[in-house]
Amino acid sequence: MPLLVMKFGGTSVADLARIRGAAEKVAAEVARGHDVIVVVSAMAGKTNELVGWVGSISPLYDAREYDAVVASGENVTAGLMALTLQEMGIPARSWHGWQVPLRTTSAHGSARILEIPRTNIDAKFREGMKVAVVAGFQGLSPEGRITTLGRGGSDTTAVAFAAAFDAVRCDIYTDVDGVYTTDPRITRKARKLDRIAFEEMLELASLGAKVLQTRSVELAMRYSVPLRVLSSFEETLETSGTIVCAEEELMETNVVAGVAHSRDEAKVTLTHVQDRPGIAAAIFGPLADAGVNVDMIVQNISDGGQTDMTFSCPVDQVLRAERAMTEAMARGDISFDALVADTEVAKVSVVGIGMRSHAGVAARMFAALAAEGINIKVITTSEIKISVLIDRKYMELAVQALHDAFELHRPG
Image 1 (cartoon, rainbow, N blue to C red):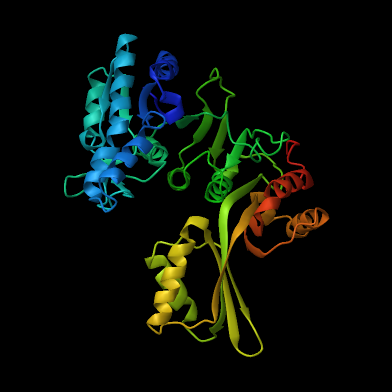
Image 2: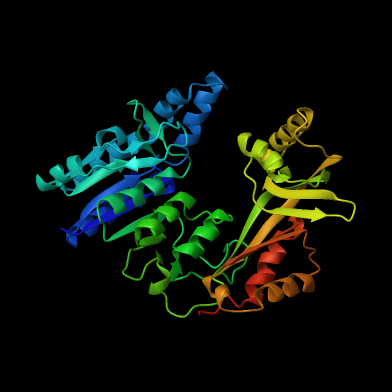
């Protein structure tokens, strides 16, 4: 039988009624002739509750026990989904990560998938099972302990199963009906995309779009797994949702596919850093060791040989960055006059594979922002992306202006 992977997020399985609705979608695919692997998240709010319980006991918790606790939310959903399908007359059973087993690294809380053996699940399919309900977000370490894959890890679980089992497609059911040109809450002109390239989706996910977890898109691109993003709360049709696929499968599209934004950004500048070989490593090594997620980097060198080094990071990591830089200076690894943090900035980006073959995208973007009186603080570019840091108060205006400037409300 052709095999389909279906993933349901927390809002899609928030209560028994929604689990029943998700099960009906699974039943429809079984009726179409598919064997199905269903990957489920914890019921909405449950993971946060479990994390809160762990933190209440000890802020310095054992990461192995943390994983044992927080993985239980998905286990409950998997069991309830399997029971619901059985009541509908469909042969189904639940699978915890260790039962598959989904093998991972030992990095508790952020483990990476190493292998998904097919033997156990394939054997059950041969015995007549039609649906394997897999608890997402979790696996088994080489030491035999439960691990978790990080927040949003159920998306990664689903794509990994689709790759391991040669699925015809991986359907990601969420509370939105697809991938949009930008956040529909910011502009009513936002348009749902029928298709988007893996590279574009990867950039949009990393730049603030919340539809798919970044690691899941990376995995889908690496193993050429077609993804479909669609709503749990609408009737599923052949044309539903957005297909995330290889660039070769797209027809001619707009130069820019979408506008992404990230509200909670900060700009950190080290002034008068000595200009010498190895200074960048001396700065960004300690930041990496401190777990600071650095994004945009700009280096300005003055005539006097002094350097200002600017980078962006999530606003909740500024204190961590300040501590890492202060400690590096105390060790004598670096020197600087001042550390200046601007915590009132946002990042706005335009993304599109069409930018490879079209000139003038940057000029058009900067002109649109200038027309609205929006000052640009930092600029970075890649082959298919241009990102700017601006004052946070202008973020929504910038998104609207860029969406209009590139006429994203019009199909390509």
